[in-house]
Image 1: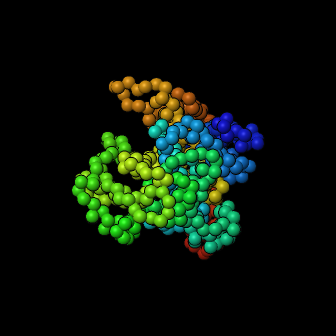
Image 2: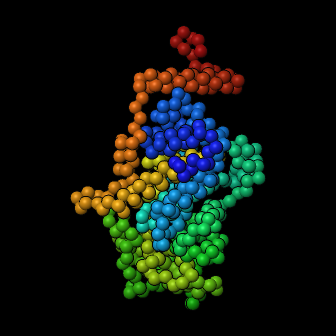
Image 3: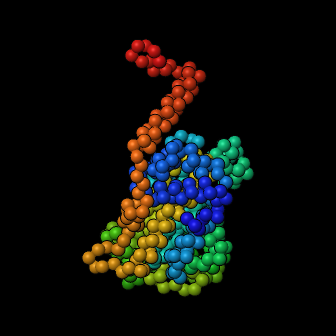
Amino acid sequence: MSRIASRFARVEPRRRVRDLVLGLLSDLPRKNCWSIAEWAGETSPDGMQHLLGRAKWDADRVRDDVREYVLEHLHDEGAVLVVDETGDVKKGTHTVGVQRQYTGTAGRIENSQVAVYLVYASRRGHAAVDRELYVPRSWTCDPDRCQAAGLGEDIAFATKPELAACMIGRFLDAGHHVGWVAGDEVYGGNPKLRTALEERGVGYVLVVACSHEVTTGAGKFRADALAAKVPKRAWQKLSAGAGAKGHRFYDWAVIDLAEPRSGHHQLLIRRNRTTGKLAYYRCWSPAAAPLAMLVRIAGSRWRVEETFQAGKGLAGLDEHQVRRFTSWSRWVTLAMLAHAFLTVVRADEHARHPTPDEVIPLTCNEIQRLFTTLVVQPVHDAAHRLGWSAWRRRHQARAQASHYRRQTAKGVALPQGPSGSG
């Protein structure tokens, strides 16, 4: 917490942000301003809501602190930047960025909020180092709606690949070096992002569709048509990395492409050894890269899914109940910090204390459990619990009365009690 203390001019928000981050690291079944404020010993959620919505501090500066913290502890020369988006299912239409759109979280089109994240994946661990909210055109075309949600009236629409390019550029402009970027089809199919990476000298292994067209010395082909021409001897069995159930083995083949731009352009093809299903990757590197390296970079893309799972399950990344952009950016940044802390502790423990053969290495889940039990487990008396019970019921009564007033104004009949009174 000392790393970000200077971002808060007053002592009250410094103390409160510490309590909020500890709450995000706690074992609360649901993490939001209400539950964390009660857990932290406050008498109402007003202070936590003020910290997220109105207190003076810059979430982007804290984001930069998170990035430096992660790089200091997880850095290695073979690290990969992974870009991907994740969605949070939401109700209503007022939460910033919400509309009906596809989200992988639900696996279908839902009313949801989507954000793009940049994950630093190294051999020591992986954690998110940047985030950008995806604001759909339905929002950017409505200045009043944007202003009500805390977005500037002049906000311009940006695609997910454009948001990814912005974050990668910010990472590089901060003076950090990375050799490779990985991402799924949303990013691989965008030529502007690929060109931007080539201009910065950053290699990439990005998923593309089977219909993606590439140029070889023999002409232009769809990726799937080119894969059908690969001879049997060209396929190699290689691991894309270790998963929860052991190494992920696939058959791989690579084809050199004929592109006018400098560098080495290749099409990487992955074949499932059981189903025969194919996946395609557009690859570029300043110097020739062996197949084993391309496979390693392709496999690192799964790290982003592990980061999302841990960030949501352990640090409340998706449990914010806020509507405005400022509150959203502050919440997700502090959740990124909480998850980064667990990742760094895990990496340092593995480096300092070799794991005995009879147990598995410490996981982020186990570190959170130990940290919560041994360090930050608060104990509150009955008066505190009863006070919060009364506060919740008063708040719910006010909300119910407000709801009934709105119904009355619209001419809706109110529910009748047993005696006929409302």
